Length: 200
Figure 1 (cartoon, rainbow, N blue to C red):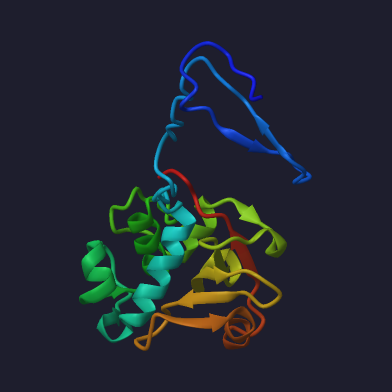
Figure 2: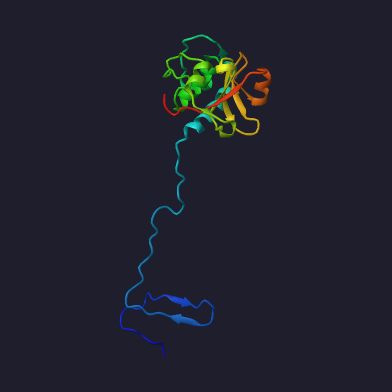
Protein backbone atom coordinates (compact mmCIF):
# COMPACT_ATOMS: atom_id res chain seq x y z
CA UNK A 1 0.00 0.00 0.00
CA UNK A 2 1.35 3.43 -0.96
CA UNK A 3 2.22 5.64 2.06
CA UNK A 4 0.44 8.98 2.25
CA UNK A 5 0.88 12.26 4.06
CA UNK A 6 -2.14 14.50 4.64
CA UNK A 7 -2.27 17.41 2.23
CA UNK A 8 -2.16 18.02 -1.50
CA UNK A 9 0.15 15.41 -3.10
CA UNK A 10 -0.83 16.06 -6.69
CA UNK A 11 2.42 17.94 -7.41
CA UNK A 12 4.78 15.46 -5.84
CA UNK A 13 7.88 14.85 -7.99
CA UNK A 14 9.18 11.41 -8.77
CA UNK A 15 12.94 10.82 -8.18
CA UNK A 16 15.09 8.14 -9.75
CA UNK A 17 18.04 6.83 -7.76
CA UNK A 18 21.47 7.55 -9.23
CA UNK A 19 21.94 3.81 -9.84
CA UNK A 20 18.65 3.47 -11.64
CA UNK A 21 17.32 0.82 -9.25
CA UNK A 22 13.71 1.36 -8.34
CA UNK A 23 11.94 4.58 -7.66
CA UNK A 24 11.65 6.81 -4.64
CA UNK A 25 8.46 8.74 -4.09
CA UNK A 26 8.49 11.97 -2.14
CA UNK A 27 5.17 13.37 -0.96
CA UNK A 28 5.07 17.04 -0.08
CA UNK A 29 2.34 18.95 1.67
CA UNK A 30 2.83 21.94 -0.71
CA UNK A 31 3.53 22.14 -4.47
CA UNK A 32 7.15 22.62 -5.55
CA UNK A 33 7.55 26.25 -6.70
CA UNK A 34 9.02 26.77 -10.19
CA UNK A 35 12.67 27.84 -10.46
CA UNK A 36 13.20 31.27 -12.02
CA UNK A 37 16.63 31.95 -13.53
CA UNK A 38 18.04 35.39 -12.94
CA UNK A 39 19.33 37.34 -15.93
CA UNK A 40 19.56 36.29 -19.59
CA UNK A 41 20.18 32.67 -20.48
CA UNK A 42 23.22 33.72 -22.52
CA UNK A 43 25.31 36.59 -21.11
CA UNK A 44 25.64 39.53 -23.48
CA UNK A 45 29.25 40.43 -24.30
CA UNK A 46 30.23 43.76 -22.78
CA UNK A 47 31.79 46.35 -25.06
CA UNK A 48 35.09 47.62 -23.75
CA UNK A 49 36.72 50.94 -24.46
CA UNK A 50 40.05 50.52 -26.29
CA UNK A 51 43.14 51.50 -24.34
CA UNK A 52 45.36 54.34 -25.55
CA UNK A 53 47.84 51.84 -26.97
CA UNK A 54 45.08 49.89 -28.71
CA UNK A 55 43.88 53.15 -30.25
CA UNK A 56 47.45 53.92 -31.34
CA UNK A 57 47.57 50.56 -33.12
CA UNK A 58 44.21 51.17 -34.81
CA UNK A 59 45.30 54.64 -35.91
CA UNK A 60 48.60 53.41 -37.33
CA UNK A 61 46.78 50.77 -39.37
CA UNK A 62 44.16 53.25 -40.61
CA UNK A 63 46.65 55.97 -41.54
CA UNK A 64 48.89 53.55 -43.44
CA UNK A 65 45.79 52.50 -45.36
CA UNK A 66 45.20 56.23 -46.04
CA UNK A 67 48.81 56.75 -47.24
CA UNK A 68 47.89 58.37 -50.60
CA UNK A 69 46.25 61.25 -48.73
CA UNK A 70 49.13 61.90 -46.33
CA UNK A 71 51.73 64.41 -47.53
CA UNK A 72 55.17 65.20 -46.18
CA UNK A 73 55.68 68.75 -44.92
CA UNK A 74 58.49 69.63 -42.48
CA UNK A 75 57.21 73.08 -41.51
CA UNK A 76 55.93 74.56 -38.24
CA UNK A 77 53.43 75.16 -36.96
CA UNK A 78 51.25 72.41 -38.41
CA UNK A 79 47.56 71.81 -37.80
CA UNK A 80 46.21 68.63 -36.25
CA UNK A 81 43.67 66.72 -38.33
CA UNK A 82 40.43 65.31 -36.99
CA UNK A 83 40.10 61.55 -36.63
CA UNK A 84 38.11 61.35 -39.86
CA UNK A 85 40.73 63.40 -41.72
CA UNK A 86 43.61 61.32 -40.39
CA UNK A 87 41.97 58.05 -41.41
CA UNK A 88 40.26 59.13 -44.63
CA UNK A 89 41.22 62.70 -45.63
CA UNK A 90 44.25 64.83 -46.47
CA UNK A 91 46.98 65.32 -43.85
CA UNK A 92 50.21 67.34 -43.84
CA UNK A 93 52.92 66.11 -41.47
CA UNK A 94 56.50 64.99 -41.13
CA UNK A 95 57.88 62.10 -39.06
CA UNK A 96 57.67 63.63 -35.59
CA UNK A 97 54.45 65.54 -36.16
CA UNK A 98 52.90 62.33 -37.45
CA UNK A 99 53.80 60.67 -34.15
CA UNK A 100 52.18 63.58 -32.33
CA UNK A 101 49.01 63.23 -34.41
CA UNK A 102 48.73 59.56 -33.43
CA UNK A 103 49.20 60.40 -29.75
CA UNK A 104 46.65 63.22 -29.78
CA UNK A 105 43.93 61.21 -31.51
CA UNK A 106 44.55 58.21 -29.23
CA UNK A 107 44.24 60.30 -26.08
CA UNK A 108 47.90 60.22 -25.01
CA UNK A 109 50.19 63.10 -24.13
CA UNK A 110 52.13 65.13 -26.70
CA UNK A 111 55.47 63.40 -27.35
CA UNK A 112 56.77 66.70 -28.72
CA UNK A 113 56.26 68.29 -25.32
CA UNK A 114 54.37 71.24 -26.82
CA UNK A 115 50.83 70.55 -25.55
CA UNK A 116 49.63 69.88 -29.10
CA UNK A 117 50.20 73.43 -30.29
CA UNK A 118 51.68 72.36 -33.64
CA UNK A 119 55.30 73.02 -32.68
CA UNK A 120 58.16 70.66 -31.84
CA UNK A 121 60.16 68.02 -33.69
CA UNK A 122 62.12 64.82 -33.12
CA UNK A 123 64.69 66.70 -31.02
CA UNK A 124 61.96 67.91 -28.69
CA UNK A 125 60.69 64.32 -28.51
CA UNK A 126 64.18 63.29 -27.41
CA UNK A 127 64.18 66.02 -24.75
CA UNK A 128 60.62 65.44 -23.51
CA UNK A 129 59.96 61.69 -23.45
CA UNK A 130 61.20 59.13 -20.95
CA UNK A 131 64.01 56.92 -22.22
CA UNK A 132 63.44 53.17 -22.23
CA UNK A 133 65.28 50.10 -23.48
CA UNK A 134 64.50 48.22 -26.66
CA UNK A 135 63.24 45.32 -24.54
CA UNK A 136 60.73 47.64 -22.85
CA UNK A 137 59.10 48.79 -26.10
CA UNK A 138 55.32 48.58 -26.33
CA UNK A 139 52.87 49.50 -29.06
CA UNK A 140 52.80 53.30 -29.34
CA UNK A 141 56.30 53.96 -27.99
CA UNK A 142 58.84 55.78 -30.16
CA UNK A 143 62.34 55.57 -31.57
CA UNK A 144 64.35 58.61 -32.64
CA UNK A 145 67.52 58.56 -34.72
CA UNK A 146 70.61 60.73 -34.54
CA UNK A 147 72.40 62.66 -31.80
CA UNK A 148 69.66 64.24 -29.70
CA UNK A 149 67.09 62.60 -31.98
CA UNK A 150 67.66 65.18 -34.70
CA UNK A 151 67.36 62.90 -37.76
CA UNK A 152 64.12 60.91 -37.67
CA UNK A 153 61.27 59.63 -35.47
CA UNK A 154 59.06 56.56 -35.77
CA UNK A 155 56.24 55.01 -33.73
CA UNK A 156 56.35 51.34 -32.71
CA UNK A 157 53.53 49.26 -34.18
CA UNK A 158 54.78 45.84 -33.18
CA UNK A 159 57.57 45.24 -30.64
CA UNK A 160 59.86 42.25 -31.02
CA UNK A 161 63.29 41.19 -32.16
CA UNK A 162 62.99 43.56 -35.13
CA UNK A 163 60.19 45.98 -34.19
CA UNK A 164 57.77 47.12 -36.89
CA UNK A 165 57.74 50.91 -37.09
CA UNK A 166 55.14 53.39 -38.34
CA UNK A 167 57.22 55.85 -40.37
CA UNK A 168 56.41 59.07 -42.24
CA UNK A 169 59.82 60.36 -43.20
CA UNK A 170 59.10 61.04 -46.87
CA UNK A 171 56.25 61.78 -49.26
CA UNK A 172 55.60 58.07 -49.65
CA UNK A 173 54.20 57.36 -46.25
CA UNK A 174 53.18 56.66 -43.65
CA UNK A 175 54.27 53.07 -44.00
CA UNK A 176 55.33 50.12 -41.88
CA UNK A 177 59.09 49.56 -41.87
CA UNK A 178 61.24 47.16 -39.82
CA UNK A 179 63.54 48.93 -37.38
CA UNK A 180 66.49 47.22 -39.05
CA UNK A 181 65.59 48.93 -42.35
CA UNK A 182 65.30 52.31 -40.61
CA UNK A 183 68.75 51.82 -39.08
CA UNK A 184 70.20 51.06 -42.52
CA UNK A 185 68.62 54.28 -43.80
CA UNK A 186 70.42 56.19 -41.02
CA UNK A 187 73.85 54.55 -40.92
CA UNK A 188 75.83 55.26 -37.80
CA UNK A 189 73.02 57.23 -36.18
CA UNK A 190 72.35 56.36 -32.54
CA UNK A 191 68.81 55.13 -31.82
CA UNK A 192 67.00 56.20 -28.67
CA UNK A 193 63.80 54.51 -27.52
CA UNK A 194 61.16 56.66 -25.85
CA UNK A 195 58.04 55.97 -23.79
CA UNK A 196 54.66 57.22 -24.99
CA UNK A 197 53.65 59.98 -22.54
CA UNK A 198 50.33 59.56 -20.79
CA UNK A 199 49.81 63.27 -20.17
CA UNK A 200 50.66 66.42 -22.13
